[in-house]
Image (tube, rainbow, N blue to C red):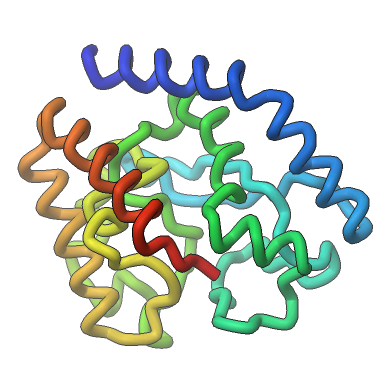
Length: 197
C-alpha cells in the first residue's frame, strides 16, 4: 500500500508540475520530424501480462521498431536530432509516469522489456532461464539495474545476465526503503553520469 501511495503521489505530482515542459517537448518532436509525439509499445507487465507503455518518440516515425527486437545502438541513424537529446537525458521516458499513475507500472521495479526482446542476439528467456521471475512485480520507471549503471543495449551476454541478476535481487529483497534508495541512487547516477542513447 505504501509503494502504491508513493507511486500515485509522485507520478501525479510530477505530471502536474511537468505538464508545460512535457507539452513543449511534444511540440518540439512534432516540429522536428513528421509523426506523433508519443511512441507506444507492448511490453511485459506484472505476471507476464502485456501492457502498452508510452514514451516520447525519438526516432523517425517510419523507422520506429514497435516490436522492440531491434535495439538502439550508439549513433543509430534512426534517431532524430531532438530524439538524441531526449534519450541522452532520459526525458523520453517521462510519459511512463502515465503508466505509473494508471497502475501498469511502478516508480521502481525491473525495467519493462519489449515482448520478444533479444539479449546478445538471443531471446532473454533463452539466455536467462528464470528470466520471467522478474515479472512477479510491476515493471518500474527505474530499477536496481539502472542504478548500478546496467542500462542501454544488451549486446553482451554478461551484461544482460548482470542486469537480470539485479532485477531478481530486487524481486527477492523488495522493501519500501530499498525503493527510496533506488530512486535517490538513480537521480544521483543520472545527474553525474547519465549517458543514454
